[in-house]
Structures are given as C-alpha cells and as structure tokens.
Length: 112
Image (cartoon, rainbow, N blue to C red):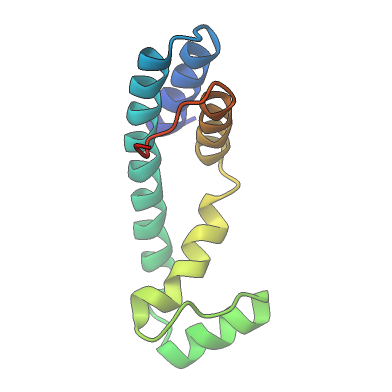
C-alpha cells in the first residue's frame, strides 16, 4: 500500500467516526489533496509508460482499449489512460467512499 492510499483510508475511517459537518468538510478537503496527489502520480506513471509511442500510436491504443481520445495534443490523448488506471485504485475508491459518506451528511467541497 502506498502513502496516498494509506492516508485516504485513514481519512475514510475518521469520516465514518463523525457526523460533524465542519470536521467532515476538513477531512474531505484533506482527502481531496491526497486524491489529487495520487492522480498526479498516476499521470506521471502513464506518461512515462506511453512516452515512446507517437501520437498516432497512442490514438490507436486508445481505440484498441475502447477509450475515446479526450482531444488533440499529447496530454489530452493520455488523459483517458490516466483516468482508466486511476479510477480503480484503492486510493481513488477510498476517496469515492469518503466523498459519498460526506455527501450523505450534506457535506461537499463546493460552497452552496
């Protein structure tokens, strides 16, 4: 288990132990920071893994995987691969559970 996953699991446990909206918002904010960190780590890994492919080869790989290209330019070609890899990691799943728990209690990061 990596650093990001451990922290998100710890935050999920803290969130499940409280119903205090202020505390949940702070936990969710911390979780979002770790989520962003994990997503960035995944982005760097994917960019390295596919770094030797041309844009044409990358577009072919996306089609092969059934992923639509997100747009023109290398970062946008890699974005679907990054999200595909990230979305099923334990860290991303922990953050999803954390956000869902907070939402059930009326807490989110977007001000109303």
